[in-house]
Image 1: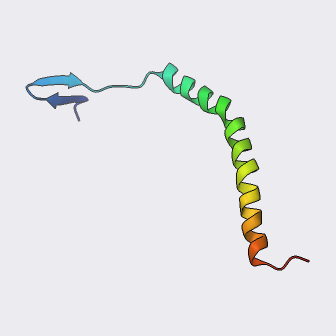
Image 2: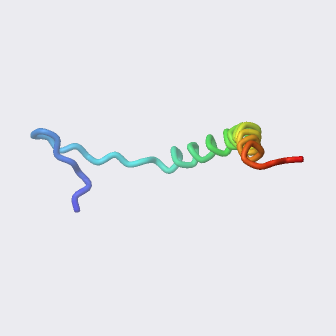
Image 3: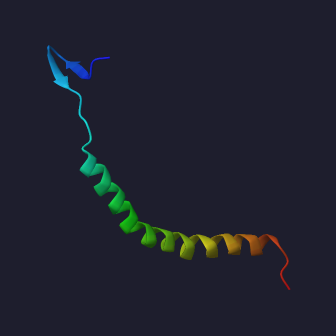
Length: 59
């Protein structure tokens, strides 16, 4: 298969992701992961716990 795409009458080479860009994206996700995990834990746990408690009799 040819790695070029034809647009109109011109052929344009297919874009490739640089190796550095992939590593940079992973580093960005790892940097943001603690904040995202903390946000989900501190919001989802109380919401799910209150839903559970609303359907069960807690004495």
